[in-house]
Image (cartoon, rainbow, N blue to C red):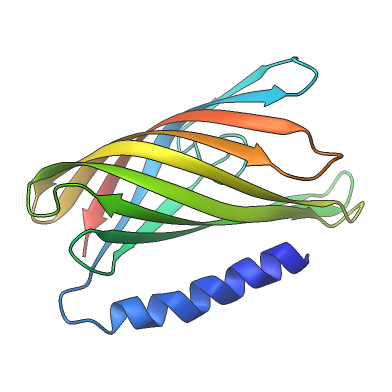
Length: 175
C-alpha cells in the first residue's frame, strides 16, 4: 500500500507544476495492447485487450500524457479492479517519464522509463515495478495523436517473480 500511496502523491505533486506552464499540452487516450507475462518459472501467459497494455499485465488503461516541455512527457497511469467473489481489489499505478527525440516534428521517436507498483487488498501483497519503453508518436492533426510503444517491466517483490513485455498501439486526443 505504501508504494501506491507514494505513487499517487508523486502524480498529484508533479501534475499541477506541469500544467502551470503556458504551452503545456495534455494528451488523453486509450490503447490496444498485447502483453507477455513471463514469470521466472518460464510459464509465459499472453494478455490482449482493448483497451490494454496498461499498468498490470495488459489490463485496460486510459492514459494521460502531460507535455511539461518541448521534449518532456509525464504520464501517470492507474488501474483498479474489484473482485466480489474473493472480496478484494487490485490497485496498480505507474508514473512514466518520457523524452521525445524530435519534439518539433509531427512524428517523433521517444524513450521512457517508469516506476510504480501494485497492492492486493485481500492478502495484503504488494510489489514495486520498474521498466523502460521506446515508442513512436505521430501527430495526426493538431487535436489527435497515434503512438506505437514497446515496453519492458520487472516486478520487484521476491514473491512476485514476473517480467512483462508489452506492445501497445495508442490513440489520443490532444487538449
